Image 1 (spheres, rainbow, N blue to C red):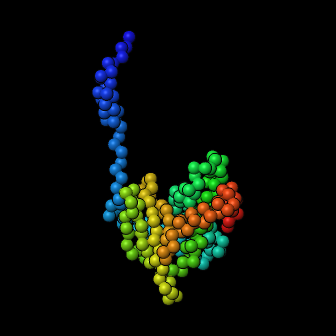
Image 2 (cartoon, rainbow, N blue to C red):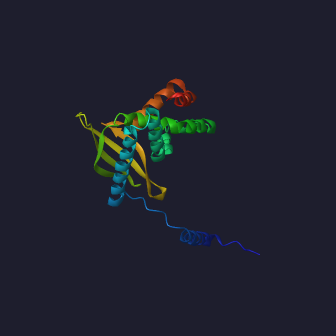
Image 3 (cartoon, one colour):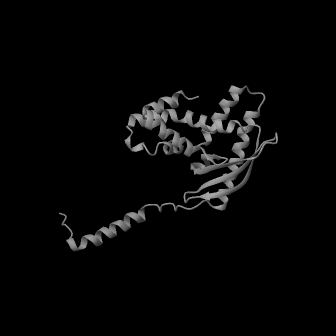
Amino acid sequence: MLFPRPAALWPAAFLLASLVVRAALPAPLAAEPASPQQQAEAAAFIQKLSGEAFQILRDKALSKEAARARFRDLLRANFAIDQIGARLIRKHRAGLSPAQLSAYRAALPDFIVNTYSDRLYDFASSTVTVVRQIPRGSQGHVDVVTRVSDPAGGKPIDAIWSVMPAPGGRWLVTNLTVNGVNVALTQEADFDSYIQRHGFDALVDFMRAAK
């Protein structure tokens, strides 16, 4: 038969049990800014990604439709679709039903890829050079600052690629800022305005129809 512990011993017993449990669990990973090595990796990722993307668009052997399709596939594999999508509706998330969220997430990948590909497609003939990389926050995120040069002699454009570490040593793009225009913030404001005027379900219908 088990006897209850005297009340005076409960705090000590609870503390001992807590220490035992904590000792059995792995220590949580410390949240830290991106290290110099991680910053260099993020910069190399953007240099490689932009090079591959624009090489696809410049490939004369591909039709315009085929080039766009491969371009979008590349972005889909290297952009943090879920994180971007969650940010765009963060003001309205609490009031959405599971069915609404499911419909939104189903429409999200194509819409996000199309949104960013439209911004990047105009730079197909340009050269992207990494200028510097800046650690952002305490979760290993990095802003990679690049200079987009127009071979035709146009004025260079500054583009900032925000990236985050992903499992398997990969990196994913979470946002793009072109000449001071933050794509995610602009899109979030557009979504907020659309939802207020037409409702969330209408927004999802709009996303499905957008090409």
